Amino acid sequence: MTNILVVSGHPNLAESNTNTVIIESLEQQLDNLEVRKLHQLYPDYQIDVGAEQAALIKADIVVLQFPFYWYSTPALLKKWLDDVFSYNFAYGAKGDKLKGKDLILSFTIGGPKDSYQPLGYNHFTIELLILPLQQTAYLAEMNFAAPIYTHGMVYIPGVYNELEDVQNLALDHSHRLIEQINQLAGSAEQKVAKFVNQWFADFDVLADDENKFLAHLSDDIRMVMPDGEFIGHEGFRDWYAIARATFKPNCEHIVEQLIVTENDKQNAPDGVTSCEAQLRIRLKADTYPDSALKGESINMLVNETWQLTLDDSGHVTISDYVVEVLS
Image (cartoon, rainbow, N blue to C red):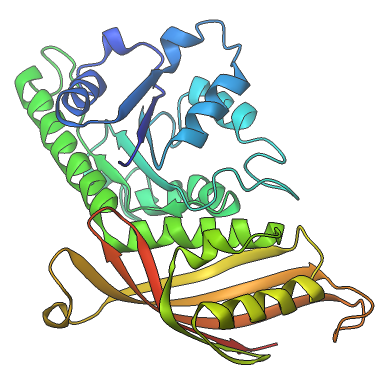
C-alpha cells in the first residue's frame, strides 16, 4: 500500500477557512494517511528532526499543505524544511533518504489568478515563484509532481468573498489533490520508479547474495551488458560475479531520467501490466586494481532499457535488460 504523508504548514489551522477543509477531506477519503500539523506539534518552533525524518522515510507520497505567504511558505514550514531536509538525509554524500518519493505542493492563494502574471500587481506566475521549492525536490532526488493550488482562497467578512464560496473552492481543491494522489499511487510509473530506486540501492551494496535480484528476473532474462550477453538466472549470477569483482561496495547509481511506457495491454495477461522503462543512469564507483578497470575511479553515463511486467500486488519482473555506455 502507498503511504501518504501530509505536512500542514498553516500557523493556526483554527483560523483557516480553507486549509482545514482540505485536510479534513483528505482524512475522510484517503487510507494510509498521516497528517502532521506543525502548529500543534511545534508551537515553540523546536522541530523534532528525528520524528519528522522518520515520517518522511515511511512515506511514498509527501504533500506540503500550506497557505501562500509572501510568495513562499509560512515561517514554520520553512523552518521545518531547513531543519529536516538536512545534509546526509535529503542531500549530500549519503543524503538519499527521500530519493524516488513523490512531492506535491498543495497551497491556497488569497490573490486572484490574473494578478499573478507580468501585467498583474504580483508580476510573476506561480510557477516562477515556487521554483525554489521545485529545486528543493530536485536536490533531494524526489519526483516533483504538478502542484495543486487555488486562487481567491481568503474570506474577509463584508469585504472579500463569501464563506460558503471559499469553502466550496477548498472542497474542489481537495478533490483535485486526492485525484492526483490516487493517480500517483496507482500508476505504473510510480511503482516502477520506486522499484528502480530500490534496485540500485541494493545493487550499490554489492552484497554476496544475488537472490533479492533473482526474485525480480524472469527465468529466461536476457541481459545485454558492456561485458557481453547473459541469459537466464545463471547468466545473471555470472554477470553479478564480474560486477562484484570489478566494483568496490558502496558505489552510486544516480537515476538522472526515467520514462515508463505501458505496452499493448492486449498482449498482457489479466492483472499484469507490461511496460518498457528507459533510464539514464550515472554510475560513480571505485574499482579493484586487479579488475579490467585497473583500480580507476569511474563516472560513467549509460542508457538502460528494461522490459518488465507489474502485477496487481506491485511485484516487478524484468525479462529484458539492455545497457548502452554513453561515456
